[in-house]
Length: 491
Ligand SMILES: [Ca+2]
Image (cartoon, rainbow, N blue to C red; front, side, top):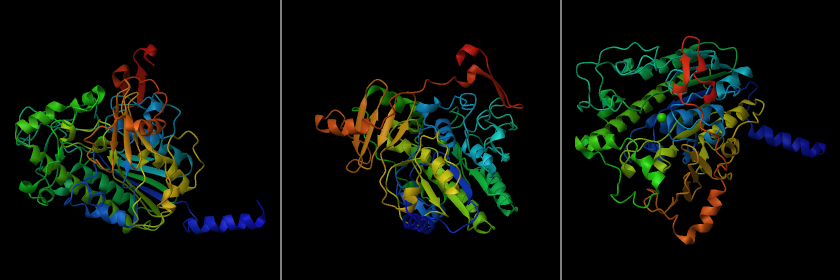
């Protein structure tokens, strides 16, 4: 490169890069099980999410973002380690990632290594003991639950278990699954568990920091139990609650493994329908989304009112979606749009064309390399994701399809037009996402689309790391945060 070219490149880079001398802070805000029923994503017309919507207006809304895995732990582990399940062997909720990946730098560990002060509160990594090692953080405030009466002492040793309140269960369904609950708690809004994480973030942002920081504020809402203050229920008229469109024969053209995934927790859906509570359940989800939105708004307000308002990158995400009866399912853990599609917004330094929606499919796996690049840290060569910085600069930048994985050998490959699903036994699905957004008609058996399938299949991981041991294979000690394999052969 001659000097003139070099100067030209430098000037271009200077024009594209934010005008700043210190690396930006990062505010990493997450919600749990929030699907695309968000105003700016238009998943449920009439949903009230003014705070997420205002963030989308001042940043880049990724309208086609997908999780790496459609359930909490593998999604969050993939996001935080930058490794997809087929690389890490962490495919489900009941697998500790730490002993399986001892040499992996998670996002906070990597940022800490490179001079950042890293802090967090609430549900950031998976919420059960053993999934959030304290050495990942400079400071961390553990999650406060809304239902301390339900939390097992071995899984949540920091939680003080209390007897269930006398009005419990609030949804009136007796002898139901403990966490499958919703209602209004008899306490003021500021006493809900997520408010403790908000308060931590607010206090943190009021402090003086001498290093750039990475601050994770993790909200539990709208995850079950969907407890929200009355005012969020009152945003919706229960009588007018619309149920998602469900077709009785929708699973007929789904292969066996897809049917198995859809059948997980079917009994909860059947019970809710039997109790004539499906509308109320949908209403509870809407209220919990609006409450989550208000919590996000409080964190955004705290940043705006702080000394860090202008030099902080904001990243907002949900770990997976949520079914509300679609495909006879009322959970996540499927490879369809309802489970993999998540809200994702990035705002602040480095984001060009704010307010312009990015429609390319992207993955939560892409966040790690994106934040490393924006912070100007050395590239971590081990990551599976691809930086979103080109899309932050140019909303039209090209992207390859993205991949979501659930359990070994099952993948959904998503392009702007197609969703191709392949299961470990060779079962396939293909949906035209533009013509059939509800994914009612599986086109995989139509020879006309053989070429499309072959093209999409190229992006599915070719091998799957073996499933790592389940939590029951270990003796885990919360005090020392150490794991001991009960039988060393289990590794
Ligand atoms: Ca989740």
